[in-house]
Amino acid sequence: MLTAILVEDEPLAARRLTGLLQKQADPLTILGVAESVAQAVALLQAGPAPDVLFLDIHLADGLSFELFEQVEIRCPVIFTTAYDQYALRAFKVNSVDYLLKPIDEEELRAALTKLRARLGAAAPTPEIGTKGAVSSTKVPEPAPALDAATLVALVQQLRQPAPQASYKAQFVVRVGEHLKVVPVEQVAYFFSLEKATLLQSTDGRKYVVDYSMEQLENLLDPQQFFRLNRAYLARQAAIADIIHYANSRLQTVLKPAPPESEGPVLVSREKVSVFKSWLDR
Image (cartoon, rainbow, N blue to C red; front, side, top):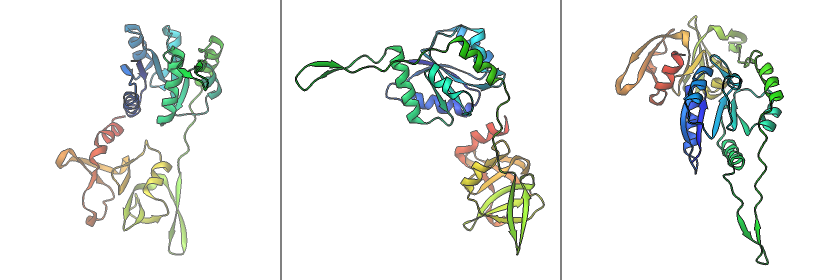
């Protein structure tokens, strides 16, 4: 059974990757999870050495490439990143693989296949030819390890500021025969009502928008907006209070107040822990 260390500063991403690795046909044993360069150094120095190291790139205290400057890493590396702008060709040529977040299960499975080939875990499988001759299935050549020149180039490139994701800055809504622009800073929350999606502005006005809640989740900055439940997507600044509710659920008090007919705005039970992490980031 292969062992792995995960270096990932996003708890949700770390839990998801752990789950994916443990649900493989041949599950990996997770030796530890580090959220920073410092934690990763301590974990690697404490031992035992893993068979593979999963490295996120941008960590809270720096870049994961700084690990190579502080501790000797002999095991193969699989990079994970939310950005596809960073020397992806170099990653693919010089490491086992890189995985773009959110990690796809098929891509992870393919990366693990390459990893096992590199470690020599996949031995040639005898096959019987049409005339009874025994042949061997060729094991794919493993990818070469990162060389020093490539590593230095990657460190220099990755020390540049991370590119900022582009999120929606304003919404165009209809008011009678007129069009009105509502900057995203004036949005308190969105909610669904009778198959329509409404924008609740901070000044108390409501506007119909031509987006579904799912589309809005992808268009809005996740640092500012959270999908509380199927019907509500709220900006953090609009959450005036949070109250413990029955069955370990949470009730949010939004300002401006939603229609009374809609009842209390609850955080979905399965999102409670994620919601707390979002607030405590």
